[in-house]
Amino acid sequence: MKTCVLFAMLFSCIAFSTAQETPVLSLTGDALEDFETARWLYHQTRLEEADVMFKDLLRQNPDFTLGTAYAAMLDFLLFRNPSMNTEKVEKAHSDNYYEQWIAMALVHYVNGHLDSATILLKNCLLAYPDDRYANHLLGYTLIDNDQIEEGLSVLLDILMNTPEYFPAWNHIGYAYLRTGRHETAVECFEKFINGNPLNPSAYDSMADGLESWDKPDEALAYLYRGTLIYPDFAYGWMHLGHLHKKLGEIELARLCYQKALEHAEGIYGLDFIDSIRAYLNSL
Image (cartoon, rainbow, N blue to C red; front, side, top):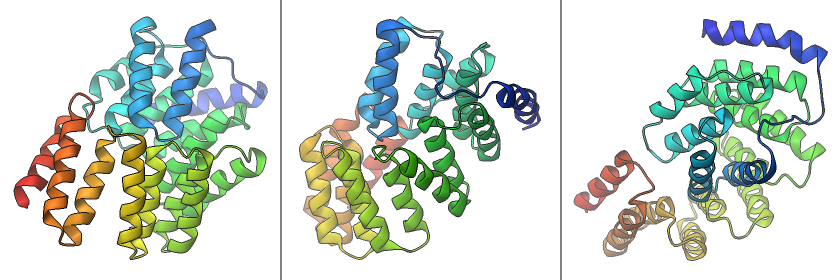
């Protein structure tokens, strides 16, 4: 925590004096284009697709610290051990302050140090106040750190300034779920789906909203749409298994858990796979 605070204090002075509209990244050409595509997939919560792209990017650019930090975040979210990537980021040095701020914020998030991640993201935004990715990361970090109103404010500001940035609706929806505003959350998830109807995670989010609103049948319908769009969506298959089990539909639950196990291999970590096996054994 002390290292993070000192880092933030040191570079906040730089941020105030060098505020810019658009950060310049250290990659160029095709590598930069690939990174932007991978990062956009990540921020849409299209984790499996982003994971493939970041792995390809880092095979060609192994010393790209910001890409390594996103890879660590994907390890964390896909139930894999992120330590190899987090340690690589922590040992790296970059003269690109934007990349360093975001990379270290992601690592602190993965390590559970959400206050430190928040400090770094806020200092990044002093230099690049309009950066939608830094704002998005800050918004959902605040929400995950139980600073829901401030996080909501950040995300709603993104949409005010950049209405087409539909991924913000996902985390806005979850913030409203946290405060018991189920109908409003569902409306937000609908906007998330409308932004990209081919995103399976958007249907999973909608299912969370509908399930919390005691509408399990509608939740099932959305989840099946998500797995139809992307059959390898192991997390969606697991969610289907949970819902069928909750409704007493044991054979359907078993089928969905088996699908989750089948599609998780090679993508999700052992913790996820072991949990699916445990769910199957409990039926």
